[in-house]
Image (cartoon, rainbow, N blue to C red; front, side, top):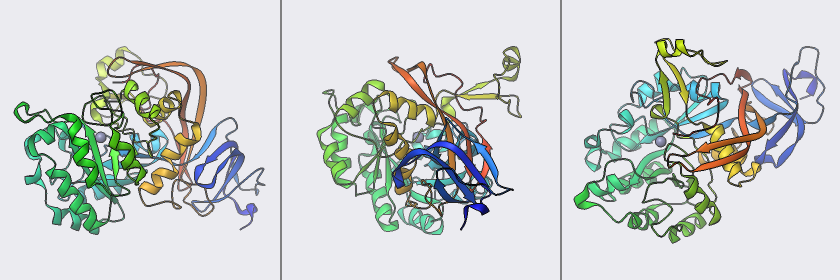
Length: 428
Ligand SMILES: [Zn+2]
């Protein structure tokens, strides 16, 4: 293939592609929805479209490994896939546990198929799926799990389902012990996909059978295989990585050594203090899901929105509501930079590592020639911002990453989602 055939050239940006070990100013040439070449000073043909991206970062299409996008079916909890995805500069979004073995066809036909973003799923271990963010605890537990149905749903939907979402948190544990995770692992081994385990709090704790939170990981980790994923290492809730002693639970390091992976799953329970403790213990997350959902989004009524003019680029929804998020994937990336994680490592988490987690390495999460032309162009801005977590702890940011535009199979989408936070000040 000669460069004279190129349809599109992204000119002069700083290309970071951890899968290929590239970090330098280069052009990216696109042809037929795929990356054709990455090299300095590509020569355009007369009809080649040129986009000047000087001063910007050109990254493989960002992959958000923890999203909640089973819109409508999961109630307020589920956001629109493209508002979280392509219109936020994120080319792949992975729904975590919204769709279930009983409701998967709805997810395929009403969410994944119409989306402009690449939509994948970690299917819920519960037959109910993540209705209203699991707010009705009585629907859940071992009685609401059918391992055979889960395995069948995975086998019938391998193009979309890349793992199983489950929980090992203190509220569920106080009801059912470790049984849910055992069933999830049975399905995971039979279907040969990883489990993604939510740690920390979610359901209210049954006081009479409240476990010692630090005992939970001791029972969780021996069940996990290489490639399984622990989520929410930075949660402020007990029962996760940081023990009551204030130190990282000693068996976490052993699990990481044998190939258990960690996803940030930033979410509303993100604790800056806990993040520092975990990172200072030398534990590095593998991937960085934002865990944005409908309860972390502000909905402003139309009349209130009328009184305060919408910031540039914001759009009102058809029902007169205006949405804005309190954090997003790019903010979570900026937070990791401020916590001392190098930029290349942060980019790996949302590109090459995420592709490995999904079993799609070489196909997405890289700008290698022949890969799908999913590309995220972002701005790395310097300034002085403050993030405040839900405990009121503040983090100063000297840099922040903002989406500019993205290509999905070579087609350009501006990052104009109203969910992109306008100002970084407070988080949930
Ligand atoms: Zn979540």
